[in-house]
Image 1 (cartoon, rainbow over the protein chains, first blue to last red):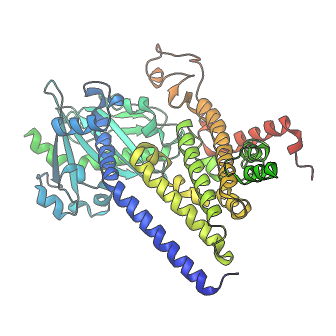
Image 2 (cartoon, rainbow over the protein chains, first blue to last red):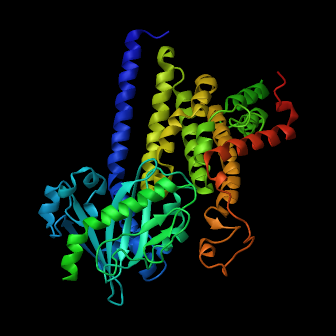
Image 3 (tube, chains in turn yellow, blue):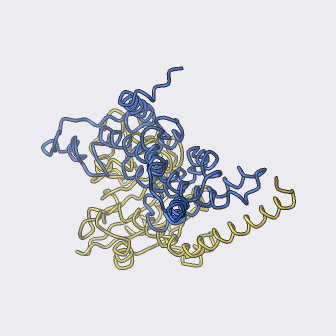
Length: 248
Length: 233
């Protein structure tokens, strides 16, 4: 039997050793963690235009993604009036770094609508064609869902989408990310009707009834699909003032 | 006299690998498997077996933590105060798990994202705490290492078996490599197909209940093969 004194000393020494060990390891690995996070976020943006990137998107490694992001992506941050914010303006909103890639959508989502800011990524293909990648965020069944939607130069036709989620059910709601065939349905859909008023794309349970503005839902994932419809119609509308200034 | 000395030297040598040591290593693989016989660690076996890749990463993580915590506990077994040994064991496990998590985040970020909370939950995996309490706290480091390795691999083995069936039948892939069933493009363009193109992925196998009965079937097969494991009571 150990005395109380020796137990306390043992506990204290153990805590100090463990704390130093973990803090040291964390600090050594921190730069690699940050780099991985950044690549992961950039990959999520680029996967919306995966079909338009030279070479196979799946084969891209971290450096390849950084390279494309540096050379072919122009980053903008706009506010709800469509005005472009400069670096200081973005940092004033609480996103250190000041570029579109630094905008934390989860934090923006919690702010009042008029205070939110929106990231815009303009991807220039090797042949000079431009794609506008817009971000949106909403709620799935269990937790947050979000997506990057790439538009053709007409700012109306969808060129590709990439959705992700925090905790949707594998095989059901998680299909919005895992099922590439489902996401491909969005390609070629339009978000504005002939008169130029905003309409968005609707995920229809039981199968799309419209060729241009609807896609098929996912069996067993009605609520996640409704969440996708909701975040598209709300999130893309936020960009309307900015898109108007681009169209001129 | 000289022979006795040699024998004594041999017995105390730490890297002996005799019958007893072999038993320590191989017993948990089958006859004393932590999942199918002791029915421990079921929670994570349900959660991370949707794909072979996740199961493999999880298995490696558990082997590392199991071996590491077993050896550390065994080395410290005479200085850990008995009154607080459980707390000390938990601190050792938690430290190793956090280290594994930090390293995984640096070297395999995608797997880290996919496994999310389950790496952290290795801390609560009863197999590891069970081995510390039942074995490492009263045995030498070398034996504890073998015991930890055996139990970690025994756990990982079942994880991979379950994940194999769940991924194959649920997604038609093995290690994300398409084996059976239609490709995703098939749903849009029906002229494209693949081996066993008629197979429709059974979504149930991706969901948690499937893990329950796949493990059940594994236990059944295991006991049919080794009847001495059947609990007669």
